[in-house]
Length: 389
Ligand code: ADP
Ligand code: MG
Image 1: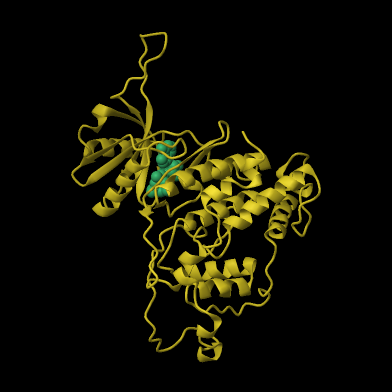
Image 2 (image 1 turned 135 degrees about the vertical axis):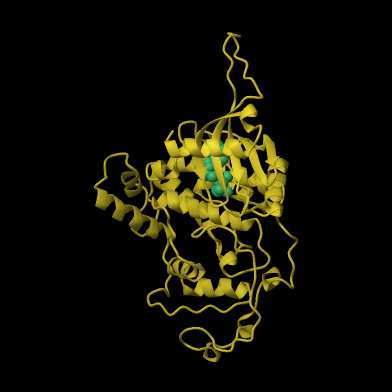
């Protein structure tokens, strides 16, 4: 443990009287935007070993110290949701919560996991299947309780490639799904018709509109760059559990294309442009219309959409060429034997399995959230159902 972490632990113990009585802090395991997470022994609970009575051991826990800059409402929300989410092996339950003055610590079981960056390029297709099944099982449980996680991404899904188990953490941005409100966004009733969209010549061809008197749009944008669903980018005020399915789709795309981050935009406009290059301008316009908006993009060569399979093929091949890793059984080798350069699955066992993976991918990445699958529906696809265990 580096000295700086030791110092930090000493400071934490000092500022939290009684903490050292119940927990023995071992290390720091994570630092997010809203918290620091430490590994600790839970001294209050003794682990009984089946034979020897001599040696006592203690369960390992994760102490998530939520920064005092978070609002009490936010902290309460996270603890409350965690508390209501007990009972699923793929969702981290709350063991305890402790408070001293303005400081709050959530206690969770500790999950041994690997850094996504260390395995996302090496998972064979069957590993990708297990990863996604674990993630979708977690989502299915959370969504069944009408909760939107809102921040589905690799660092919030702790996966152990050796045990092949995954656990969803970090409900810091989660919220209950609200009833759809037709006055909040027209998507509830199927969006605007084309005639209702003002003609393009009523807008400037370049830059922003001057003296724009239309009311601004406000909506929950919580989430992480690159994982935001189109309805979040279009500021829809009726966001649903489907935003999580989109993010899970981006994770599947990342694993198949072996590129992380797959999307790497600096802001929401950039993010919309990235989506346009993949899905095409026409489908993006349709999606905007669903949320009562027009959408224009003057970048050349984005009129045509590409098949997502073709994009994956190019991404993997470019990488493998750079690193010269076409060894037999490598992911690139596997892909070469599964799909052609147009992304079409080959007529082989592996090809069919890749085809099944692409079906899940396309169903999760539907721009129109009403056409996007739920987590439950995704789990019913052949990719998961035909291959159990
Ligand atoms: P934040 O809101 O700050 O992102 P998270 O709950 O996502 O906080 O935790 C940050 C990091 O700490 C995670 O990405 C993970 O690496 C680690 N972590 C969190 N909870 C656990 C846990 N229960 N077991 C092991 N590691 C954890
Ligand atoms: Mg996090």
